[in-house]
View 1 (tube, rainbow, N blue to C red):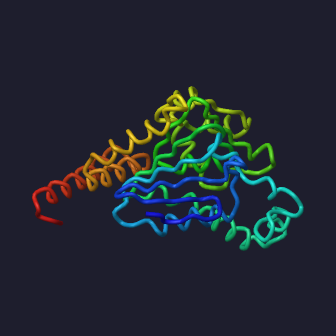
View 2: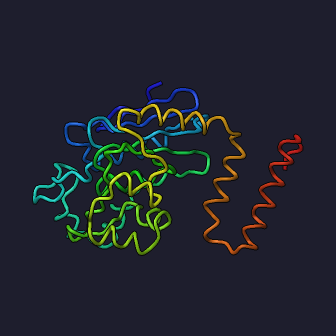
View 3: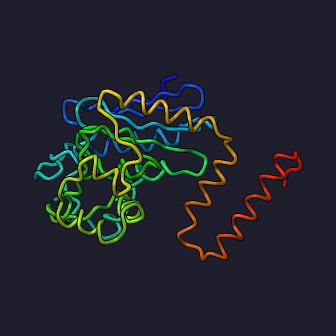
Length: 259
């Protein structure tokens, strides 16, 4: 079933799997506000039976970042000019960026598992979109880079928290401060990538992971995801209490007793 096909985003649903494809291959899937609106709309339209969302991209690059027209005086026609945004009030700037962020926030919903299949460049906004997903499978030609600081900007699309969570503060700072490329082998070594495969095997590896995720009990996985996401914010004793409560819910559900 086709869910959406507009502004460089194509989304389909087959049974419990949604596939979201970036389709601006000729532009290396450079991102625009229109693309962000489309991605946010996909999140709103997902049917309740969807359990896994796969994010992929056409062409040689996952996403080379923000469309560079945004940096020109003219901006992206009818949509975004950094010059105009800079002249807006604090409230207007905050609201605009919050709207952009909506494309990056729904991938970690508790009722979903999201998988980014990354090949080629994942730069800036592309890096942050991959970070928005729960898991990342990378082709061996994948290259991540956070280039915002070299442009006088900061990563503002939700990427800083997951980056620090995955690789730690010091490495995250070094990656962002230098803007250097993190190649696939390093990405796997430091925890950015769950798996690295030859580029030709990326679709098959993504399908295998999707099948493995679907083979688990959905409600147990939702509870487990919530436990893992909250672990960093809890003390050891608090986390054990959350584990006990979650397990009690699962035991009662399996016994058909409800809450």
